Length: 319
Image (cartoon, rainbow, N blue to C red; front, side):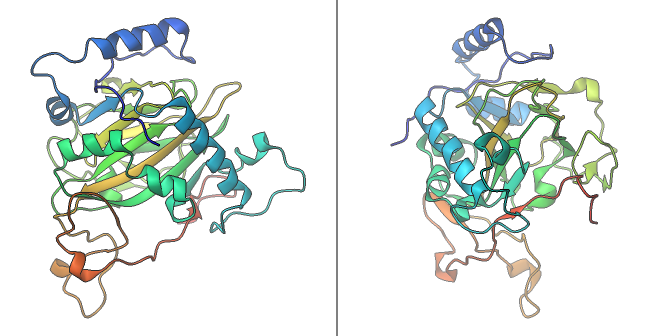
């Protein structure tokens, strides 16, 4: 069912705003073709920059299936989502897909999205940057409509702490992602210090309610936009500083499915430990194995997290 996808590359920065033109697509393809230089393989680029791109990892048919599944989730056809209200009778598909910006844990509702956690092209790359044993613990479905804010500078390890710094995101583009419709921006190399920077509440209308990282040794001018066509996957390290800006496109969604992974050889102290469990032994077991063996399989797994809508600025931020 899944394609295996071609080689990996980091694109030449494209700083000009706007939806990707044929020229931009051509430049991106040329960059991808030139990416397989000796000594510049995936692990080198990932270690150096903190991110790498899998161009064409998903086929157009796979992307179309995931888009259709996203619509079913937002219509409530696959089950309840915390914080999601039913829409008016006869609501159009275009309106439904724009009602919410982000749904957490869609793989808990969708067999297709659960299966996509283990997409062969993604797993092949994960085992090269993480190791042979890989587990997933989170998925997020972004349906970023026109005018929807982005997310301020942050590091994923702030939200999902791993003991071995192995957290890795796979950001699957379901639409062409451009500077105009709110693509990712990254600070290349910002993962290398292995430091979780301070965080604070922010009231910037460009961003949703999530806290922002600050007091790091980089400027906004150091950031690089990650513009990719639909079907590409952006993989990035949990310590990499990244953000997104609002979707300012006059017409066009920026949909993405984002999955988080780590080494199965490490414990996952994501949630608060029970009162009778020492923090050093705590391991969240609400996981899905996608590669290799689980050294802690004897502990079993749980199914605790439930799908929910991420808060946005409509109606204020509840902190």
